[in-house]
Amino acid sequence: MIQKLDMARLLLRDAAEIDRLRTGARDTGFLVVANTALTARDVERTLAAYRDFFRRPLPVKRAVDMARTGSNRGWGAPRSERVDPAANPDYKEVFDCGFELPPGDPMAELPVYAPNLWPDVPGFRDTVQGYYSAACAIAMDLLRAIADAIGEDAGYFDDRFDRPMALLRGNYYPARPDWAGEKDFGIGAHTDYGCLTLLASDGVPGLEVQGRDGAWTPVEAAPGEFVINFGEMLEMWTGGQVRATPHRVRGTSDERISIPLFFNPNHDTNVAPLGSDRVILAGDHLARRFNETYLHLQKN
Image (cartoon, rainbow, N blue to C red; front, side, top):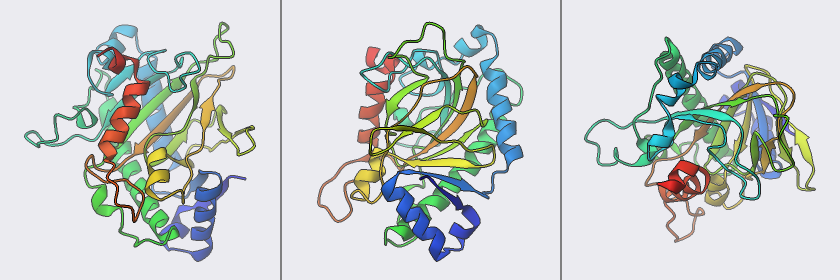
């Protein structure tokens, strides 16, 4: 069962709500959260901005094609990613943007802090950047609650996320193509790579979560509610106190748009298990996983 949490109760550190967060993080790795600072209207406005972009003519999208970069910024064409090595490339389209460092910063040249590419679409940049800022604030509040839930100081994560490798993505899943076979997915089965994912969607079904028994279960959240899940990095970092759970989008007869925020720490954060003497840099982990997924990075 996927727990549904109330953000206001988490912010108050309601003991029962923290316990539900702890249980969901450990057992299923997926949760739904409601009553955040982002309203249904905020989410619908952002969904509309992405929908407008994805419906634009191909030359508008190609002008910000991430395939010509060494990073994951801008538009990703259908079949430009393969998250499941056993499946065919994913048939979705995406648009990625992320955290930028000021010019002259010694880490500004790293691909995870690459400059964003913005299409020539009125209002798109302002809408997406406004959503990005609000979503990052919610994700940070969730991490503070998770720190409490696993017995750490509530501020444990704070200085590790002041230059976050936070990536916001718009996903466009068309109706499942007639040609799609058993190895074709909107996004193939995978676990997320980083720490915490905050996912909004237009409410159209499609996301499926794999249980410990191997069965696939739909998970949905209406606009204004968010699906939360955890990535490989946070599972490792917390010594397994949170779980990274496989999920996928096979696709249906309806198109679907979703907006995940992949909220990850500073590049030089040590994400080795708490209390260990190992060093595993967050940036190294993400770079390896990105290189395994983005086909244009493999070609570069």
